[in-house]
Image 1 (tube, rainbow, N blue to C red):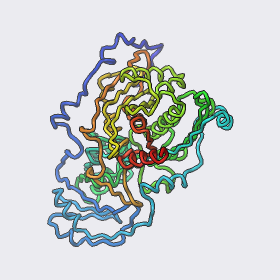
Image 2: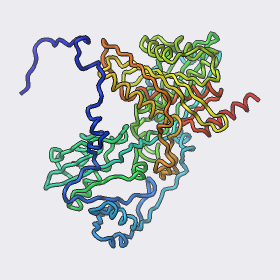
Image 3: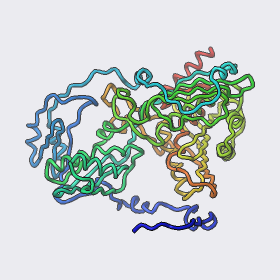
Image 4: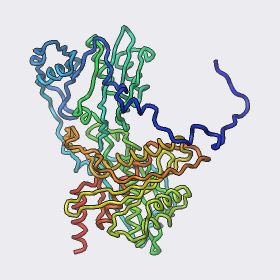
Length: 537
């Protein structure tokens, strides 16, 4: 029955709230820490088979020959084939794995010279014409008014989602109905995709969402669920598909590699006068600046998702505040470049060009909490500042680092992050999200980078693909500016967007050398320091 209210609705005043605005722990925390929580891999149904699927050695590789005789000799295996889709099924996962290892397959690989070094030139070559995002003034007038110009290029490589729980699904078909237990961030899309794969009406597909052990945007695609559905149909039995760690990396929809080109200028008074911003394949999110610049333009070339055809050699997709990490790294690095040229403290330079009250407040709170002392970079102290906006939330971060000049290794010692998300529905949850974002942000800033050749992925486990460890963690301080009279904004991802920029600026303050390429690995830091020495000798 549908009913329509007449008249207005009186909303509670903040002082009347009994739950919102007060700290609460997650209700599922006890289940997870005691191991009672059920994930897709914990689901077992009568008659279920475990599946291991034949994978190509590289994206774009085509199957040209296969010998299944060795696999057939493993007792109890069921081999399923539909075109190039081949899987070994068994009541025990290790037996299915053994059968898969005995398949002899030959693949033809496409030729490609793309790798983690050449990809950036390729992206610029295939980039579409830019789409206008925002602008004002006249760029020619801005350039004429500038006594100093800065033309810089920022690079950001592919990053994996690397969830602790790999993609997993169990699918059971009974007659013309199907039940899917899926590790997925998009269960409604699972319903659509499984229905399409099986030729069922959508209302004949039931999706059960167990706990998800990490997603970060990577579990928005549901390849493993479709694979399990196809195999359940072909085998006539319930099937579990659980990707190995190598499959998880190989089939990931990586955060796309991207390029940002910025031409900017300042006047002889140290005021921002020009901003010409072009981002390639990171997308629009976070691309618009919030500083007072009379002559500016922002252009976006290519999507942050799958890009234009031929842009990426494998799948790409959303990764924690999609695109905003790249855009904030480039923007906040460039702001610091100009602050250094103007001979102005980086905090004072930002405040000089900020009119947005929220941004001024959040930046001031972060600096005061940190105990920022003015100084013209590089001071040698290893301090950095970066700020940004994501999901309606304003965030400012201050960090302190140590850089080992011999090895190029960075130790992040302290991070202070302040964010204004309007009404904080759960301040404790918001603080935990900030801490998680800071931790995860250390990875894309310092270490995480996918190495590849054409469609072949070289990083297939955590022995070569380093994610943040507890030993990396700095002292973390969070400040939630709880504006109870403002509408609540997103709090899950804003704090991650500043981590690349704040660490880059802190590295510059420590060494006098700037790194323009994420992640800022020891080799790249040593290379930047060598260039600085070469310029000053």
